[in-house]
Length: 323
Image 1 (cartoon, one colour):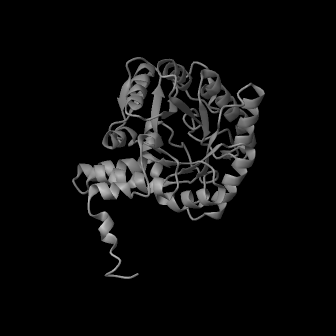
Image 2 (cartoon, helix red, strand yellow):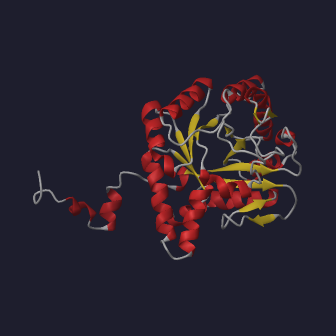
Image 3 (cartoon, one colour):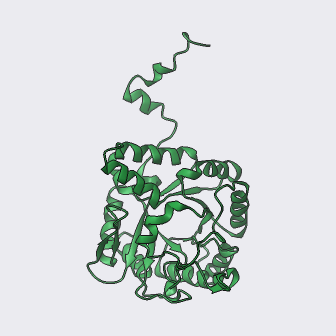
């Protein structure tokens, strides 16, 4: 039937009707909140490029995790800023490192919260790249040993899930083998499977103090034009034991989220990254946009594209609006 018999506006007339017929539902259960762990006591260092976010010492990490839990957010993902960095990022698997200490503290305070840990070397290396440098580039195979050791240290601290973000070939398999050999066969891996070499990561690199000392990460992170390659990355990670697949960034790659979901039917996470967050904050501060509406529209778009989980710096603000 065509107009005037069919009038699609009939079902948009009231907020209740719109809510009843909503095709996509966003709830705090969809969110994972990123937190940045640092050494010290009483530390809450503001991150200038990410308003409302901080580098946090352990007791403040717990406070922020408790607030998130009280808002219905079921999970956090932890990134670490070490006291010292070296060429191999050896502090990444220090059992007394800021991530490991934070995992233990959160699990003691909120046992039911799902604590995810980012597994990468870039925050821990003096050169800011995601592994061991040989001949001016990251050496893939020697880096796998370090990533597996880091993931094991997180599991031993009590992490519920590990999330390798380095984009080395074979790292999911190496981590899966390391976890299984040490009795952690039930710890899931959320793989940053389709992680693009994006300009949207700038504020995060300030927060994690992980700006590369030289060059960039294009030899290991994906090239923006590529979609088929993302599927190949995802299928390789699934074959190596990934339990959840991640796309990063989210908003410029909604088509990738949808395609991965359609082609694999695996759980898909999407990272609503720091640049996406900070652009909204900056435009809202200038009065150019309604920040809350743009935030919610962005998160809804990510969910509608097919993401089951959304890692987002908006988690607490969005959870408050969702009630």
